[in-house]
Length: 230
Image (tube, rainbow, N blue to C red; front, side):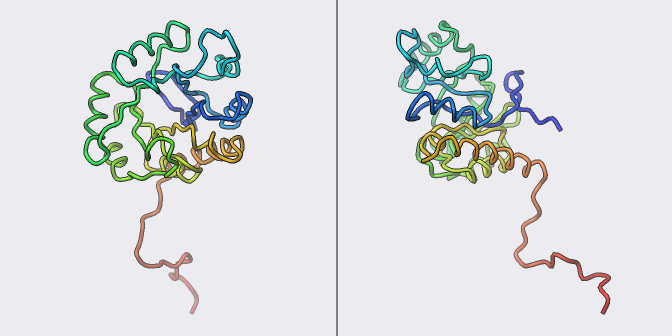
C-alpha cells in the first residue's frame, strides 16, 4: 500500500520531519537524520553559516537525499521573516519556507490555521505543546477540532513531542505528519531516539488507518460464548 505524504504536489515517503538544531555535534546530527528515516529536514536560516566560510551544518546534510525546509526561527517581525525567507532562497536552500505562527491555544488555533490556508499555506503546523517542552500532546481537543475543520491541506503536529508515544498519539489523531527537533536532539541517545520516533510515526499512522476498536465501559469476553458446548 502506498501511503505517501503530499505537500504542494511533492511526495514524501516519511511522515516524520526533523529539525537540525541542539545536537552535540554536526556528526551526531547526521547520524540522527539517517536513523530517523526522514526525507525532509528543517534548517534555521539565521542559525547556520550560509557562506560556508567555516564548517557548517549544511556540510553534513546531503541535499540530494534530504529536502531542506528553511524556517524563520529567531525572527520577530514581518520584515525579518521576509528577509530571512528570501535569503534562504537566494543561497539555494529552497523555494519553500516554514513560518512559525503561534496563537492563543484556547480559542485562536482554528482561526489562525484558517487564515494561513486562505493566505496560501501548503500545510499547517499546530503545536502539540510549547516548543522544546517535551510535554507531549497537551491540546488533543484542539488538535481534533483542527483536523475536522481543515482537510484541504496537510496538518503537521510541530513541537512538544518528547518521546515515541507522543508521536504515535499525534498520528493516531489523524495528523499527516509530525515535526520534531528537541525530542530527538535532547534525548540521552539521540540516534536511538530518532529510530524510535521513526517507528512510532509508522505505527501511529497504521493504527489510524486501521481504525481503533470502539471504547467500552465494561469488559467484553475475548472469546464469544455463542456456540460453546455446555
